[in-house]
Structure formats: structure tokens, C-alpha cells
Image (cartoon, rainbow over all chains, first blue to last red; front, side, top):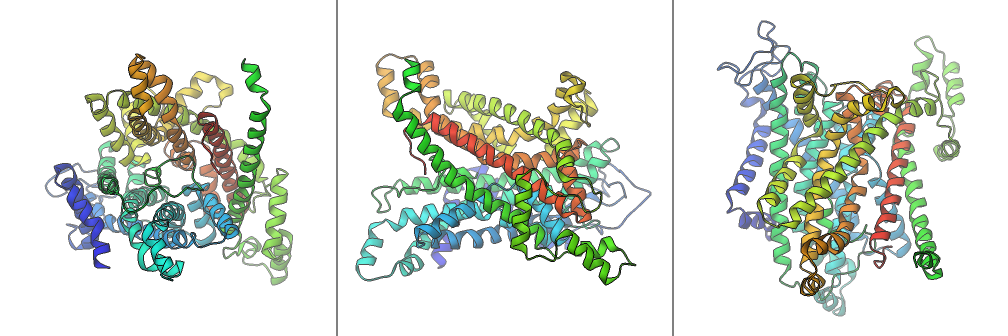
Length: 307
Length: 328
């Protein structure tokens, strides 16, 4: 169990010698720390207004300036990290649990059930995330949980497909055959052996999915869906900045930089771990040939398909 | 010669079989996605009737309204009715404005479709151009520059990119208008000028993905034996790259285009907000706030239909690019 969890970290660690990736890992760690501490480290109350100092430029008292209500931008950025990042984590967990478990089990389904499940996944992939989130909000009310669920549900297909492809690949390995010959049932083999082989790939996909979720959640907040004003989040801050673009064009820099840095760092880590995995896979795992992929659009590599 | 290929009976039967398989896949996907559309909106807690009846509404009035909207029927029945009407081009009437949903969507959808198509063209040109350039000299300066630009483009949120574009091209340089939409009937030039910034915004991440995918698959192709063979036979590098490697390596990039259609349409919704365009996104957001379910259902249905059509197109393209590869 422990070894399985450490594996993706190890892969990242092995790839980390480059400065580029150390910076990326540092950024992710820093953002998560800021999100965890939140208002504890914010210099001002993120909601405190100061009508005498609106649209102030960066100064020693307000390092990033103030917004249209005179609220401290740095404090809002710090407090906004939590809804922007941690809700993305929750969305990824929803996608992971909802996709990985059925993805692994799909190997056991009969052909008919498999066909239905595959079409269900295909159907989820045809739904534009933003429009879907608007629909969820319309039906169930506007709030962060609704937005998170909408993004998470639409992330199920990517996890489903990756885990399914991995499971199919490993299910034809010789040790599985051997275990079956010793009388192990297929579900047992999956539970006991195969699932941990998919974990490193899941780590890669989770990292890139997290970047995608950060973009999604911020996009929704930008549209006014999810976190409700006056609570700050990176997306809603950008939305305010857009309104006052002519008064303070530079204000739109900060939340944009925060989002881009986070997503870039997550993508870089995901890529590095992916490269590490591919390199490792060049040492044969015990499969002579890759299992046929029955469901894919062309032969796009599963992990690459969603970067 | 070409004609002989075209009417080759083997080829026709293969095409027919392909079409049949596509159809078998397409219909269930369409059914399930409409079911999801209907499900998330219709099964939500709904007090529309009570809202419409207002504070003075009696229970009888609410019951009458519920009956008029068909809320008192079981949901499978409502789904079938809704789908049947939708197939006939009737998406119902807005609860609040009484305007037929089809009318509102038909009015606004051209806006989103123009941005999305414009963006797709830009993405394909930039993406294939960039990928090709990068793959032609692997690990050269150009390749590294394109790869770095690509990872930057993937990390920048569309709405921030849009704001930056507005700051540069509309506030500082004043080259393009920051907001607004002009119908094609008022002059193609003006229409295009208003389309450029929103489309460029949407195109950037898709172009990055295409370039990246094309580069990877072309580099893989370059390692193949047939490339060495062609080189030995004395074909020029350029000819090998364009005639063989590009064609063989293009398929994954084309598949990527298909995968990104949903996010292209979703991105159009965000672009609408920034550039103040009267598209279906604004319609959907207004409807969401008013809990106007038929409008939301209509918008979701139309966007899903566009995605399905684009998926079919991409599949056909892939079949043409790689006739030998069996996809089920």
C-alpha cells in the first residue's frame, strides 16, 4: 500500500533533478500551502473595504494594490486560493472515484453491459463542461458544491478510459494467467494485483486533471457560477477586473498569473511523471503485446489523449 | 483510374459497414446524452409552478400550472415527449418569456458557431503549422521555442488570455474592437474584425494541443523503417516529411481536434461574456438564474448535437487518413 502511494512521488523525484521541474514542484507546494493557511497569512481582511483607496497601484502597504472597493488584492488572492485549488482537488477525486472503479470493473463486464457502459462514457464526453455546469446550477442552485460536482462528473470519462486501458494491458500479463491457473478468480486478481499497476498512470492523469479542474472552476467563477461574491476566488477576481479594465488594466495580472502558474506547474509535473513512466515501460512488464483497445478514437496514447 | 477506385464494390461495402458501425455507436450515445441532459435539469427540485403562480397563487392554480407543463407526469414519459418534440424542432417554450426556445437559439447560435468555426480554422492552421515546424528539426531552436510556447498556451486560462488580448489590441493599440458582434449581413469585413479576438482566444489552447500531438506522432513516424527506406532511395527530406510522415502522423492530431470540440463550445460561452457577444451562453446563464429549464435543456441539446456531428466528421476523416486501421 505504502509503496504504491510512494511510487508516483518517486517517479517525480527521479525526474526532478532539472531546475525546471524543481520550480514546478515548488510552485504547486507553495500554492497548496497558501490555500491551506488562507486568511491566517493574509495581511488584511479580504472583505474589508476602503473607499479612500480604490484602484491603488502596488505600494508597500498594499503590495499588489487594491480593487474597485479598496480591498487588498494580495489578501484576496491568498484567501481565494482555497476555493480555487481545493475545490479542484475535490472535483478530481469525484472523477477519480467515479471513473477508476468502473473502469477497472469494466474488464469483468459481459459484452452487452460493456457496450452500454462505454456508450455512457462516450455520452459524458460529448457534453461541454461549461454548459453542463450552467445546467446543473440552473437545476440545483448556484453554489460551489454544484460547480464542483459538475466539473467532477465530466472528468469521469478520462479516468475511466485510462484505467480501463491500463487494466486491459495488465490483465493479459503472464502472472495474471498464472494466478488464474492457480484458481484465483478474476475479481480477486484485479483487487490483489492489477489495480496497483494502474496507480502510477492515475497519478499522471490526476495531475493534469487537477490543472484542468483549476481552469474549469476558475472559468465558472469567472462567469459568476460557484463561489458567491463577495467571497474571493481567482476566477471571480478576474471577472471584477474585467469590469474595471479601463480604470485599472494591470489589476487583471495577479489572479491570471496565479492560475497560469499553478496550471503550468501541474502540467509540467504530469508530463515529467509521464515521461518517467514511458521510460520505465520500455523495460518489459511481462506482456508480449499490448491488449487491443476496443473503444478508442484512433491509437492516441491514453495518457496523452487528455493532456 | 480514380473512377475505378470510387466505384470499387469492395470499397463501397467497406464504407457501408463503417457507416453501420458508426450508426450503432452514434445512436446510443445520442440517446444517453439527451437522457443526461433531460435528467439533470428535469429531476432537479422544481418549484417553477409555485413561482409563476406568485404569492397569491392557490394550490389549485399551482396544480393547474403543473398539469399544463406536464410536471404531473412520470419522468420517463416526459423525457420521451420532450425528445419527440425536440426531434421535430420543437424545444418548448420559455417558462417566463413565452418565447419558443428554438427561436431564441436560432437567433443566437450563429454567434457561437462563427466563433467556434473561426477558432477551429485558426487552431488547425497554427497547430499543424507549429507541429510541422517543430517536427522538421527535432530539438532545434524552433522546436524548443514552439514547445515552450505550447506549454504556456495550455496553462493560461482562456478568459485571462482574452483580457490580455483586449488590453493589448483594443485598449492600447486599438486594432480590433473589444466588444460586440456584427452580423455577416452588415459586411463580412466588420464581422471578421469582431470575430478575431474571441476566436484567437479560443484557438490558442487547441492549437497548442494539436501542435504537441502532431509533433509527437511525427517524431514517432520518423523512427519508422519506411522513412529510412525512403531516405536510402534518395527521396528528399521535405518530400518524406510532407508526403508520408505528415499523412501517417496526422491521425492522432485530427482525433485531438475531435476531443476538443466540447471545450471549444464551452470556451465560446466564456468568450461571449468577455466580448459582450449575444450568444447562447448568455442565454443559458440568464436562464440558469431564472430557473428557466426548457431554455437550458435546449442549449445543452444543441451544443451536444454539434459535438456529435463534429465527432462523426472526425471519425470519417480518420477513416480516410488511415483506411487500414480498424476502429470499432
